[in-house]
Length: 256
View 1 (cartoon, rainbow, N blue to C red):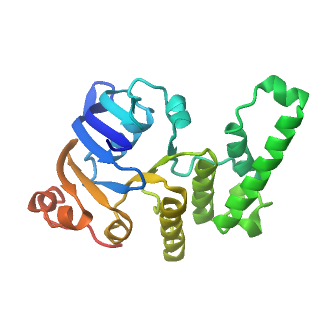
View 2 (cartoon, helix red, strand yellow):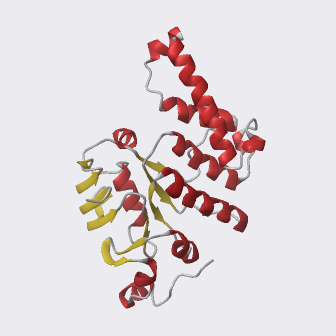
View 3 (cartoon, rainbow, N blue to C red):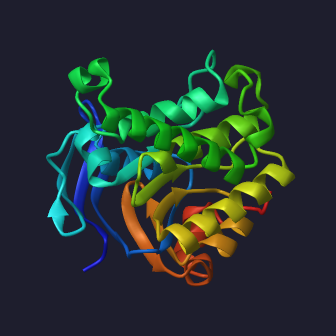
């Protein structure tokens, strides 16, 4: 059984159904990508798995169905979606943004925190140390005291990823993670994703248009067209599939 399994997934917005019996799987430690032309249902798939929109069918994670779970429960189960530019507090420092994420994983009651029990203080010290370590890992150590809103866009996207790491996620959902990044930032993020998979054992499902990055990072690709799966396999296999080429209007997406 795969770590994440999706079957007969249907989802949409109001009366409009976007996904039609989508099925996919991501193994433990695997990086998979959802491909498709604009409007194919890629982002809707990510949102349906994360529980942020209504869906039906089945989504199983680590052997347990989560299709009826709330978005918050899904995060606690170990699946975290990295937001697109909306996952930080711009007025707070880099350190405080990371500490907030660490704090959410502590699990202490409000009363315990108000009293300031020794166990809480020790855990908060550990959370601060973890936040600093993640900032260094992301290459953000030099700006740890800076206001997040003053950071370059690429740094803020790395910070979003760092916040998710500190939540203790086992599986990441990434929607166009390199959008708006320059070449240097793309390289940094790609290296970080591979490091997370190698050292942290994370599995990842992403939506991405950059085929060069897809070929470099991904073990498996699922292609959607009009909300239905039309191909699945390695990136090389699906990008050579005539049906996939037709879905892209006769053109293979460029490497830009």
